[in-house]
Amino acid sequence: MQIIKAFQDFKLTDTQVSLALDFYGKKYKFTEKSIAYMFFILEEIFDLQDDEIYNSLTDTSFITRQSDYIDKKHYPHDRGIDAIIIDEENKIVHLFNFKHISNYEKAKNAKFESNEIDKVLNFLTAVFERKPDANSNPKILEKLNEIFSAQEKGVMFSFQIYFSANIYEGFTTDEENRLAERLKMFRGTGFQYILLDSIVQKLTSYSEQLDARFKIVDNHFFEKSEFGRRALIVEIYAKDLIRIVSNDKELRNNLEADDILINQSYINENAFEDNVRVYKEQGTNVNKNIKSTALDEQESKKFFFYNNGITITCEEFDYRGHRAMPIILKGLQIVNGSQTIHSLKDAMTENKDFFDDISLLCRIYETKDQSFKNKIAEYTNNQNPVTNRDIRSIDVVQIKLEKELVASGYYYERKKNQHKDKNKEERIDAEKLGQAMLSYYVQMPGEAKNKKSIIFSTKYNEIFDNNITAEKALKAYRLYIEIENKKIDLLESKPFLSHATYYIMYFISLIASNDELMNFYDKAIEYIEFIRGKEKEKLKEKFSDAVLFKGSTPKAYLSELGL
Image 1 (cartoon, rainbow, N blue to C red):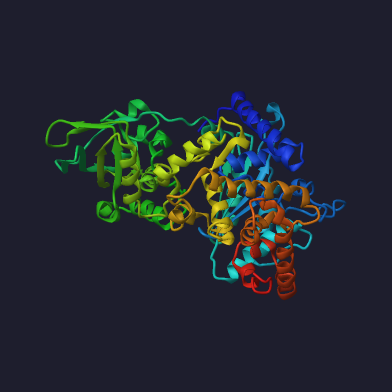
Image 2 (cartoon, rainbow, N blue to C red):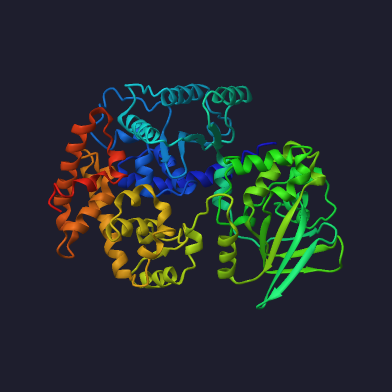
C-alpha cells in the first residue's frame, strides 16, 4: 500500500505535541518536544491520566529532570524502553520505544534505526532471563522488580512492544522481518507501530451515520415487534458483514460487490462507537480461534455453529420479500461483534478461498433510545472482558453529578475526553474521580491504583451511590490534586511519593478531624515512611515502592501506627 506523506499530518501532530509541551512541560519541568511527544501519545492513544503517564515513563532524559536520586554525570541507560505500563489485571506489559523528529524534511524520509531492535531484544532477554543490567536507570530497575514480583505471585504476562514516532514508515522490510523472527524466542510477545497515519486517524475520527444494505441467507430470518421496538434475527454471510462496515459508502450499499473490492477496503471504526470493547489485534484466544476457523477448509463450513453471532443496532431497518431479500440499515452500530468482524477481515485478507461458506447469526435492533442501546451492548457482550465505563456514563447518577459539577465550575467527563476542548484544569475525568473516592471514602487505596476496573463494576454502587454530591466528590478530588501537586515539589527528596498518592489519601481519611485535609499531610507521610522502612528492612533488595503501594501491605501496619 502506498504511503501518502502529507505535510498536514506532520503539522497536525506537531501542533498537538506543542500543546502537550505547554501543559506538561510546565508541570514536570522539561522543554523538549521529544518528551512532550511521549506524553501526547500516552494520553491520546492510550488514554492514560497525568499521574499514570508520569509513573510509566522510564526515559532517562525525562526522569533525570525529576529527581536527584539519579547520577546525572553518568546517565544510566533506559535500554531503549522509554515507557512501561504493567497491567496486572489483563496480564500484559506494554513496552514503548519513542522517537520524535523535529522537522518535516527529516520526518518524511525517516525510518526506525536497526539498533532500536537490538536494544529492545536485549531488554526482553533481561526480562525473560531475570537478569537486569545493573547500569539501567533506577526507573527501569524498579519496573523490572515490579514485573518479577508479579510473576512470582503467578501472573503470566504477555508483552507488547510499540515503536512510535512522528514519521511515516517503520523499519525497513528486512529489519522488520528480523524483529518478527527474533520475537519468536519470547513467548507471548508482539510488536506494532504507532506512526503518523494511525495518530492522525485517531485525532480526526468523528461520528458519522453509517447506512448499508445486505442480503439475508435464503429465507433465514425472524422478526419480533413488541413494546414499540423491532428486532430482526437473520443469517448473514461473513463477506457481507465485512462489507457493511467498510469505510467506502458505495461499497456498503453494493449488494453485488466482489471479493477484491471488499479486501481492498478498510473497516470504518465509527461503526463500533457504541461497542463496549476495543478490538485487540489477534491478542486473545477468541480472536485467534475466529481467524483460524475461517481459514480452515472444513471448519469454516461450521462457523455459524461455533460463533455467538453479532448484534447490530440501527435507527431504522427495512426489507421487502421473503427469500434472499435486501435488508436496508440506517444509522447502524455494531454493539457486539467487533472481535468477530476484525478477525474475519484479517482472515479474508489472508485467504478468501473459504468465505463463500461462512455465515453467522445477526441480531438487529431498531431503536433511537441510547439507554436501550447501551443495555443491549452490556447484556450481549460475553466473549471478551467488557469495559463498563461507557455503560455507566448514561447512569442517572452520573448525569446528575455532571450537572451539579458544572455549577461548581468543572466539566465532568462521564465519557473519556468528553470535554476535550475545555481547559485541562477545569475537567474532571470520571475514572480519576472514582479512583480518588475509592481511596478516600471506600478506603481501598491499593485497588484505586492497581484495579481501576472495579470502579465501574463491583464497587460502582458503593462509590457512586444515590447520596453522592458535587461537594462530596470535590472533597476527595481536590485532595487528590493537592497531593499530586505537592508531590512534584518533593520528588527530589522523596521519590517514593510518585507511587503513594492514594495511600496518602487513605491515611488522611483515617486521621483527619476537620475539613482542612492537607493539615494532616505530614502525619500521613510519617506513617508511609515508617512502613517503607519496615518493608525495606524485611525485603532488602527485593523491595519496590511500586509494589508496596499497589497492594494492601501498608494496612498490615495499622496497629503499629496506633490506628
